[in-house]
Amino acid sequence: MYKRNISEVLLDGAKKHAILVISGPEGSGKTTLVKHLFKEYAYLSLHDLDFMIFAQNDPDAFFQDVCDGKKVVIDDIDLVPGLISKIDARSWDKEKLILISSRQVPELKSVKQYTLLPFSVQELQKADLLPDQLKDLIYQGFYPAIFDKKVDRLDWYTNYVQMIVAEITRDIGDRVLLDVFHHFFRLVAGRMGILLDYNSLADDCGISEETVYSWIQLLESYYIIFLLHPSTKDYGKRLVKKPKLYFYDTGLAAHLLGIQDVRFTRHYLREKFFESYVISELLKSYYNQGEIPHIECWQGITGREIDVLIEEKQQLFPIEIKQGRALSPLFFKGLNFWNALTKGDPKHGFVVYEGPRNQTWSLGHIVGWNQVAEIKQMIDKMH
Image (cartoon, rainbow, N blue to C red; front, side, top):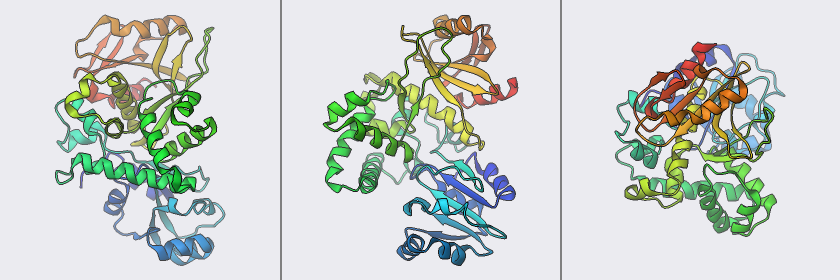
């Protein structure tokens, strides 16, 4: 088993809290990691029909029966909607509980929550699994199964998409919509890195705008996509208020778009793939430390924009994402505009590019594609 960066955080969390929830996309390695770290815990899954029926029909008795005074892992908690909300209604004494979910869960007072996404670049580097070329990594994706040489990438993603579509259409409650949702899923991939226009997506898919909104929420809840919302800090400028849509895993987006490895570098969304990769790596750097990131973008109606804004302790850190392996002073054009607008400090700004080097210029920090996680480390040192 490959070491995950969140491991020590989870072990420490289990010492301090009676109940942990570990959520993340299907296939991100949650169950494998929990079984490895918490061998002293009993394990059960709600995929077991007997446990599922018990939990659905008598949740209080279920918790009393399987958890009373024990250390227990309950996997697939999301298969019984509403079960996790029962946690706050109970008093917990000697029990130690770890819940695993492949969907986002509501915040609960009595629970410490963590998010595990697929492999990060740091984790791939430590395991000596990182491809030499950025394009190969973006195309391949980050799900742990993809790095098992016995697994064919195309077959795995094909099965994964079928599973996600089946689960979501089950949640929708209308299996007739399976083909429609599958088409919608592919159209969403084509919007990656672009301002999300619900009306346009509705027209292209032949469904209502309300349906698009609900389906986007479902894809978010399954950790397939995330929306990067615009900052409301206007600094005297009129702002664009639409969010941008990104995928947690670029390999999944590439599969949905039917991209072949040899054609990836010529794809019209190549720049957006890189943006999605960088922002996902930023999210992982926070989640793997048990922290919730505060990440937005900034977009003026005149076309001026900052790709990413990270807020830490009321301080904003702008990040620009640039294509190209050759460094250029032009990379700092957006940061220079931002610093002039906000009277910002250049040392708080970052540019991530497709080259491999980290450098510190007077205009800001240059960060190589394979060292995105170091941005969080540098920000932490600035506090």
